[in-house]
Length: 238
Ligand SMILES: [Ca+2]
Ligand SMILES: [Ca+2]
Ligand SMILES: [Ca+2]
Image (cartoon, rainbow, N blue to C red):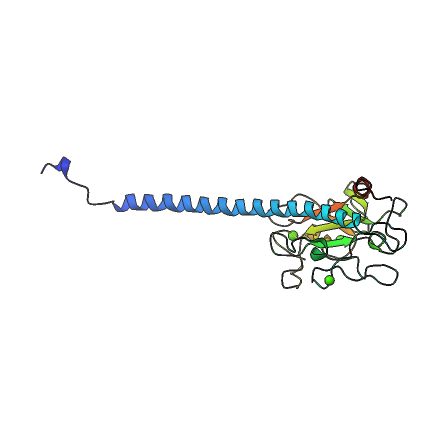
């Protein structure tokens, strides 16, 4: 038989090594792109859910009437993690200004994309169900800064994003630090100063771009003007 017609016996070791390197590179690239895609999808899902939560909060206010004055009011935070807002006291005030979002009372899903509860804060004048709120209600005091603050407002110059807010909802993001998890327990605290600002229990919060290592919270706040506008459009007198 002529040497030109002889069938090859298989791959050489060098050829095999090249094939293995190519397969490894392809698999690594695919896995990386898959995890990047998952992260983009999870962040997008939570962002969309936060928008739905904003709509649901306005819908709650539009469909609730205070006992005196027939004014709207926002739900109380849920502090025992059963999804139901806590009962108000005899004066109509919520027992706590902050807790998790009362998802059952709002008819929403209970977790963000990483199976942690959304944090929810509401000003007492806007969640009181005896008087409710209207255009004459004094401004609320929730503030959002672009960096952590050393005081009750935004202590760094030009870092105020919004102030006088009646309510705010946030997801603690992929790292989940500072969140209440699906077991109703608190996850560990963050060491990032801007993230700590979002789980230290006061009325100042931080919203800024998500970074690879560190801040990954997503914050949604309810502007009083948007709230009033939507309630008037829904036919409520304020
Ligand atoms: Ca509850
Ligand atoms: Ca976070
Ligand atoms: Ca804070």
